[in-house]
Length: 348
Image 1 (cartoon, rainbow, N blue to C red):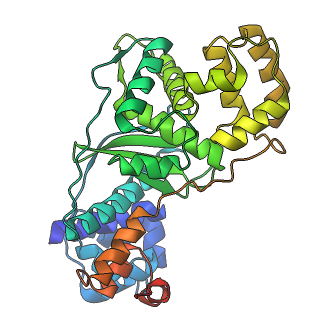
Image 2 (image 1 turned 120 degrees about the vertical axis):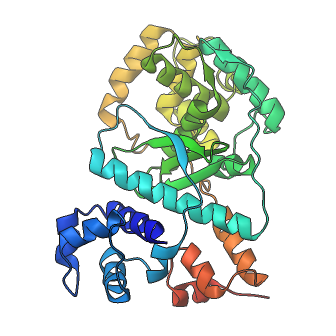
Image 3 (image 1 turned 180 degrees about the vertical axis):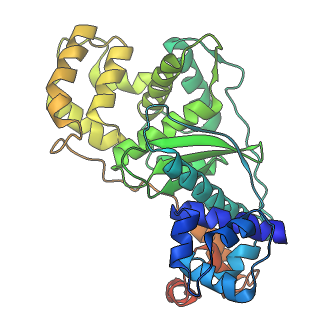
């Protein structure tokens, strides 16, 4: 128990982005940073008064410190270009592990077994054509068709992939990894517009399930994951139907219509046109110059579909409705106060 409490105290502190000294100054009654360090190293066990003070300072419930760890995430990979700093990266990792732990816990209460199968593990990715082949095989196996995907995050969760949306700074695009070695995990920034969130989720899926040739550089892998995301959002056959196979120019109205229909940014559409050789590299370069002043594509249409998953909360409500867990436990899993959870919980 001492080890669990020690890990929980450190985890909550890291998530809060506090140093030992900063946490010490927030404690009432006062607790030295040396004492907190001893709690985190399992050299001492805090008494009930200290635990209550820690829970207030760290904004967690007292029973949080006694909850066993049920999940570990391996190969958690941040994109190389992201400049978050080690402190923020550590906080994000702890937050993601905690969120996923609660997700898997409610599945355990409901006896839901997660079993993921990678249907394209037999394809080695060396180039863009291999990516197109992998996407075609994935579409057939998952039976998602070649039309627009209404909700990417929901689709991924239907395929036994855990998707976590986190409140992160703009420097964070996403990350991927594996929980308990067999559960794929994708994390996206909830603050992004839908088009970017959809693309980032599928980009991270690429990192998770594509089998890349070992001779590829990190930059080449990133480009192939971009192509993978674009190909899933608008497959080759669909793209040719929308824009044709050869174009010398493409109107902005066409691009806006595709963006709003398929939930893919204009920049990603043009990159796809270049990859499929619908436009020339020079045309793409000219487009990049033009769009450089409006990277966020303000005023250039938007995808208004829903882009989130309510699966976790639905499972919690189900467990509470069937009285498998108490209302207090349900609120704890949702990281809400009991009164707030009761206001949302309505049975028929």
